[in-house]
Image: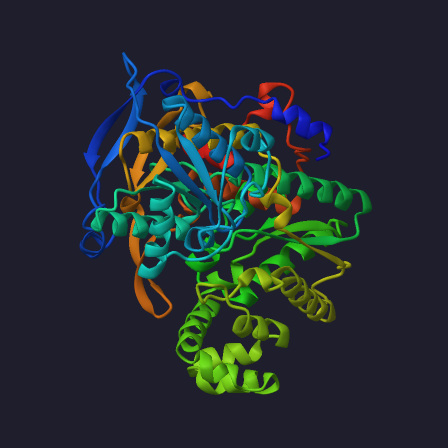
Length: 547
């Protein structure tokens, strides 16, 4: 396998660890916990894993002898930079505790567990993948672990390989599944521990015990580099408005973090759109207003950052999508038998009056995307909706009308971009390389201490790595009840951008100035080597939250 100069250099990088995990380690138990909401409902669903205490790892006076243990690992859902370092951390952690311990990877996600598709991860395999991006060591998948027969099929192979613990590396849905699996195995007294690790570039898996999900730091640095390049081009040619859609389906953390890093002319934050009850036309009018104001200063160019989930946060669109999701979940068979040419009219006739009118007003392509392309959870795949093109076209229409009225005298030409997959498998930043390795190492100690239904937690990450705090948080602590597929289900509560939080407030205080001036920042490529102040900075979001 041919390697680039960067790969060779990164292979030699030794990730940093919290001081507490370097020598002998002891687990200290904190207070009992409860779920963030719907306590009674969650407690009933998880009687064996509810209310467990927080765990913190501290330096111990003497080391403990741990028996050898076989551990399984699964990469679940979309890729995020640093997944390979979580696996390296688990491997090094269990080998430190007992060199005879073994690690097995299930191939292509949770489906590998159910289908008994696995490989042993040995030192030579692990060494190939240290500090690299991607999930290609064992691949990932989106199979949902929710049925008893899946749990039993999984148990067969775990028993066969004498695996005593399973680590599921994933986002909020995957960790919800991990919690359900932990509860099932605990209820059956199968003696299998299940541990979760917080992954998602979207940054929406966080709370008081999980400061950030891994991959967010790297992805935002990659996107910010490319947006910076576009802004440099934009300021050089001075003739285009660049509409840039960024990943982040359920929350605008990526768009906000990139805005803080690059200072664009406009950044739409979905949570604010929802809070202010804005319509699609309100958003278009706001963008057009900034374009017109810049044009009066002779600046017929600029950048607009758009979170991919924006459509779902516009209250009127959200109501439409919710009704569509429920209707199509209940009538999937009937809908599938209707001719494509008649599907739009069929939907218009079946929705409530308000939603029917909104649906009918949408461009054909957007309406089609709302009904046809569903994800495995039965939801609209908003990333397939070309929001950046939709907004650019609508802004152009509004500006043309303003031109007729004499309200706009400039020029308006657009370029469209979607930055998504570029960031998901990037080589991890120093922060993510260290954070992920620590998460994996922490998971090994949670296993050694007999824990199940916990998520690996590493905090205080704006401080130097040796001051980081490692421990575990019960997954039930993060749960609430939400409607999925037309019924109430326990899920990890998504963390949205807080409009009263420090990151959003810092952005809101500057955005009017950024809209008017061309005050772009060009972050440049992710820096691995060089001064600490360049290459080891955590995200602006974390710095502002922890300030």
